[in-house]
Length: 238
Image (tube, rainbow, N blue to C red):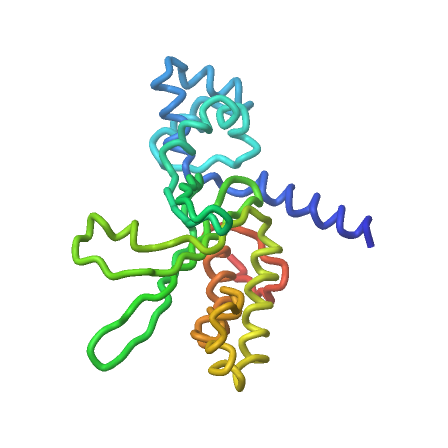
């Protein structure tokens, strides 16, 4: 079993290295702006100058494996420009803590209730991609309504945040979907318990969202070039 898991991890790692890097143009331009020539970049990345030219124009994407030397040198600048700041209340001290999460947001879902007049947001489910197969999950709940849009980020309190792998994200979403079905008949009684776990509260309040997450997350991962193992594929012939 352990050998199979190791082989699976190695296969996923190999696929990640061959995955097109969507910020190829920005990365190459960072190197050029730092004084590198296209020839030097080509030599470092073991490719041709014409390929680097196409990268810099956005005509082609390099793979993470090809661009690794540049990522090691300039990747932090890309990460520095892609982050979100969150906040939460420390359960033990009640003090406000601020959390900086780097990485491109690849999934964001506002969860709420729709009546005949308007949609009222209650939760926000966010996923950051932090490189390779690393994912960071954030669940926020809205604690108040703000009429001033500049104050909107302060109205959302983070109730869960965790860095993990792609398979664990899928496992969590599948479990939430399954649990929402399990608790469906008792959901109103569970919600009357003020001390119930926030995930249980979430799936009891919004079972339809919980049941949709396995599909929505897989769709987001595929749209951003991730390999998802449990997908039945019907590939085109071209």
